[in-house]
Length: 345
Image 1 (spheres, one colour):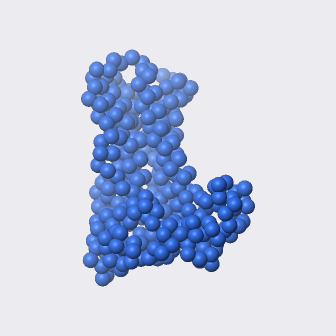
Image 2 (cartoon, one colour):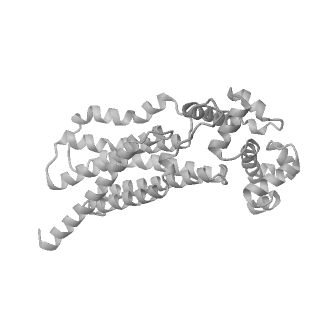
Image 3 (cartoon, helix red, strand yellow):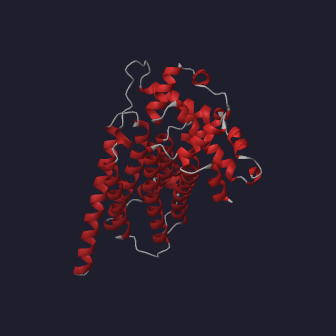
């Protein structure tokens, strides 16, 4: 090793070590910070731990020999990255997740670890590529979800926009890491120092963004002064509300009232109103109007509804008057329904 190469190696080692340290401390911070985002933070913590420990193993492998079984165990841990990012995204959005889903998504990792000692070791095994593609598939699914939500979700809710941006940043970083691994697999670029530098760069970017948006990890949804719902109950009923609204599409009911919706959720009108205001930062009327405008936009873009009048679209979307439709549509989209339809043709 000549002098210049040795200096490059030492610099790369320093840079990657910084990334590993930041990644591990970030993960620990998320674990010890107990709040209403704790469940979501657990998955992000796993994600950070895996990438940090994976990079630690890779650095050791660059300087020392590593037992084959240990090598495959660390390699198999990559099967945790995609599912952890996926569950983090769902938890952050407070979407319902069945317990069986956790097992299904983590089964590949458990199977790989259980049989890793049977896998023969030989250079660039195709298994590497399978693990990298597995992570990429999850990234593409999340990106797809992001694109769909950008078109359909409530663009005017600041908190939701912040969450989507953070998830997108995490996904882009993950895409970069797995893409880099694939390029290394095909020997297009060298493992060291490209992985070390990229990893640290990604961790630093994530950390800087996180420090500027601490509410993504530490926001506490406190109980209302006159509410008997604690944080866990608020979370439970909010998930039930989203399920009822989005799966049963109650917003299409032109006669939907706060009373009707609260009866479906199983809480009082006051509690439901507080939950909507507390989490979505809008009142009941605005909350329902957001969903109705999303539906109206979908219909206006659908060629099968081109012959429908705007008033018909309004009623099909759940509005009970054209005036309320026009007002809500303009407020949420910053344009009229007529102009929106013309722009989609």
